[in-house]
Image 1 (cartoon, helix red, strand yellow):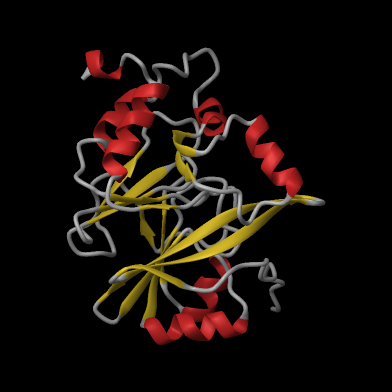
Image 2 (cartoon, one colour):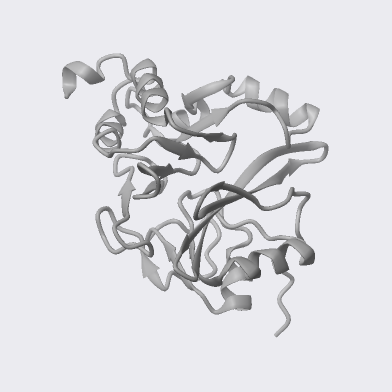
Length: 248
């Protein structure tokens, strides 16, 4: 049976951000004339690659990706992502990780379930689930170069609007996205169940996230924050949850 996989969307070249961490800045088309950026992280351990928040690439960049190592794992960290996961699963016969109910895109089924504190494709790494979120969302921590934290939609770091169309940029701003590190307001509103207070409901999940040591950060949207990411994330969490220090 022939499968019509989504075609590659406009994207940039593979960028090396840390010795064994790479990024591909891509795009996601939300509506006509409305596109925002989205990132694929590429973690290398030995000669194996793990794709985080996968983005399908054009053939030339796909060849460059294959030159970095063997593509062995793919990880879906957010419920509203996953349109390119089936393509990678079928092309590379890799091990696909996602949370049990992260099935807005039902295919592929997970080969390994992503669980809080469970197994991780990177030795020494760990997953942190946002267990209070209305929709499945998780973060991945790996012990690279002082600690690297990867998220999907929950936390975002914006330095510029590169990769966003005019309509996409204004859609993000309408949803509360600003420059700098932030707990994404539109994600927090979506993730909080009806009748619960967004200023309190998710703070326990963020407290667990801040227990991890990291100095680098990248989300599925926005840019890469190097060297002082923990301070930036901690400040963003305190702005989103003003009572989090008293609750700790």
